[in-house]
Image 1 (cartoon, one colour):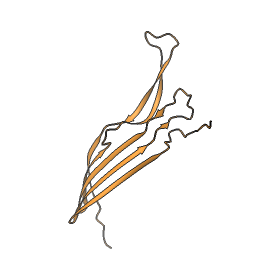
Image 2 (cartoon, one colour):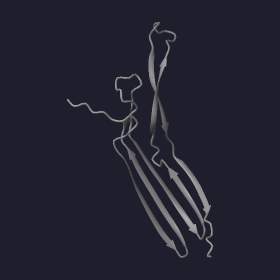
Image 3 (cartoon, helix red, strand yellow):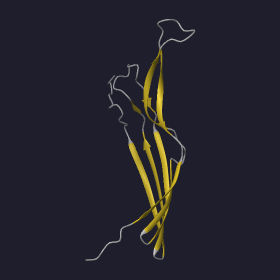
Image 4 (tube, rainbow, N blue to C red):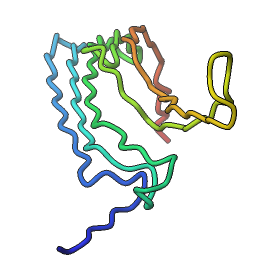
Length: 134
């Protein structure tokens, strides 16, 4: 049997797809943007027998925005992680010393997952600089 080695913290596949649509409104415009990204699961170590070894699950993210442009002013409403997915970025293994009711010398360990989760909504606005003609 051939043994396969994979880089730690390196998913086999990372991909995204983006869609943009602009609706002209005379001199103004309304823009719609959506982005979906996917990352396969990955290992946090080369050594699968290490006590700190863990496989980080795959992640999915859906983001979107609607922007209204008037001359040099643009105002947008955006949302990140619209599906409220729990995206685990890394893990750490902590060893616990015996507590009450445990045998002396017995150590237990558990993974602590570091995750990004929750929907983020916001409003963004900016003014583009006026170009001078020389």
